[in-house]
Each structure stands twice: as C-alpha cells, then as structure tokens.
Image: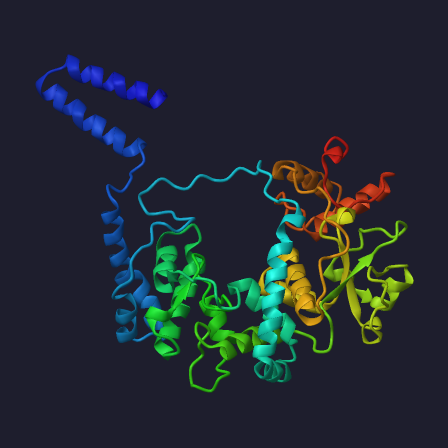
Length: 432
C-alpha cells in the first residue's frame, strides 16, 4: 500500500503541473516504476524467443564441448516446445514461485502408501509375468545376481510392467526444465545426457518418452542413469527401455548390481522388537550380525527363524513409524533398493511386493498406527531442540528420517519416557 500511495502522490503532482514540468514528472515516474516494480515478461511468446536464443548461445556451446555433433543438436531441437503445464517452473521475467512454508502436514501416515488392492493386483500380474518371462528372468539373475521377483517388483511399481502411459516427449520436458525450472542445473545435465542417447541411435526421438520429471521408459531411468546402466539384453544392438522387455528387466538388474546388490541375500524381514529393546538403534550405520539382533530377543513376526545364511551377516534395525507400525531387520540390499528411489517406504513396498510375487505372501503383519498428522513446522521445532542438545537428526527439514527417529527415542529413554521413536503431539511441550 505504501508504494501505491507514493505513486498516487506523484500522479497528483502531474495533474497539478503543466507543460515541461509534467513531462519531467512523467519521466521521473517511469524511472521510479522501472526501479521499484517487478519486470514481468509481456507474453509467453517473449519467453519462447528467449528459449530459442538460449538453445543457441548457451546450451549449444556446452553440448558441443560434451561431444554432441551439430547435426545431432539441430535434429534434437527441431520440434522441441516449451511445456508450460509442467510443475515447478520459474519462467524468466515471470513472478517467482512462492516458497512453501513448512507448516503443512507434509508426511501422511505410512499406511496410506501400501494400498492393499494395488499391491494384490501388482502381485497377481507379477506372478503371471514371472511365468511368461521365466527364461529371460533366469538369464538376468544369472548375469547380475539380482532375484527375478525384485526386478519384477520394480518394473511393476515404476511403470505397471510397461503398461502405464508414459505421456511426455522427453526432450520437451528436459528442455523446459533446464531453461525455466526451479532446479535448472539438474535438468541441464540430464538434457545433455539425453542428447548423447539420441546421438547414439539407441532410440528415435519420437519414441523417447518419459514422465513430467524426466524419468524414461519402463524402468523410469533418468537419461544419466540410462547412459550408465541401460543394457542391450535382446541382442538387437540397441538399448531399448521403451519397447523391449528383456532390455528393461536387465537394465533394472544391472542398476541394482552396480549399486552393490549382494547375491544370495534377502532384502529384510518383518520382526517383533521386545519392549525391553530400544527402537533407538535404527540405521544403516548401526549394523550388527543378525544373530546378535536375535540374541536380543528380536525375532521374525512370522515365527520362522532367520535363514541360516543370514545369521552371521549384517542386518540393520528399521522402524519407519517408530513403535507405531511394522518393524524390520533389513539387509544391505534394502539400501540398494533405496538407490532406485531414496525412500524407506518405497524400498519396503518393493520388498513386500517381491515377496508376494515369489511366495504368495501378503501384507505386513503389524498395522501402521495413526501417525503422520504432525505439522512439518512442529517436527522441525523438535529437530532443532534435539540439535541444540547435541543430537544428530540428519537434515532438519521437518521430516522424521531415521536419525531423527532414533535421536528422539534416545532422548525419550534418557528422560524417563518409553521410547516410541516417532514425533507425536504429546512431545511438543516436552521437547523444546
């Protein structure tokens, strides 16, 4: 309102003056507005023109230095268009996107992630496809050491076993986001990688489709992952993760193998942790032989013993909802799955789906409690309080990762509270 009042005063002066004085005031007002008001692009056409200039003067020199030929560059961008419907855009000359306040309940109850209807459907299809592609999966497992059910589970989760619609021309997505997204450097790297893919001849641009975030084909690889991990498994001379099932399955397995998959090991086990054992022992950095966890009274919730081959190997406690949900002892392979998507819930989903495909298993035995309604700002406040007391919570972002969960459980135990290892409203007034 102050700015508007000042502008009104200036225009009042204009009306009271005449001739040269008025012209001078007009010039002064124009200069004032140029300095103090945001400069927005007049139309989208202005941005489109800037985009074409950016391709030639900015992106092309970098692509050329990276080994992309002039012919490949021109062909790749001949029909590329900015996609104004994509999320997280920041067009030059337009108002900047509003920063999201950390006051929303950003994380929901973990149980909502595990749709039983969806999991049952994927498992049934996965078992059918395990039979249909048995010879390919056997060869994939022999080559890369990754079990077929794990590969099938990722394939099913990422693209519905290749049946999901993958709507976007990938060059449109990457070029748009490299030019005017909130994370342009990330997408600029992926755009250069995509140019290398096209130049290699593995795929024609018309078939090179992906998600709004730039993930491509049936395994949903970013272009940089394609260059590192995609393989030609059907022997046709092309790495085709859009149309070839063997290439898609082998590429997923190669990705996991390169990330460190340990052959002959499971991903993890749902367990029951006794009341006398603190949940504040979670995390990949607190691994111990599974036999030691068993010696503390932690056993599989199914009642079965841990496999003999697993007992001397390393395992880690995982309590994604603290004591309010299923609890696990996981192997290093769990964290390899997280390399595909850095989420505990994603890796648990893949593990559970793989078990259903392999053995007809079902949902986790323990129910997910009513957690996840906390405001991010409240969780952030707890994290800051823990940090002030010397705890390591990882990234203080209002989201309860494993370091936050175990730090909270440790603090609870030291303050006469039963460790739950998960933030809840009752702790807000106690932890400041």
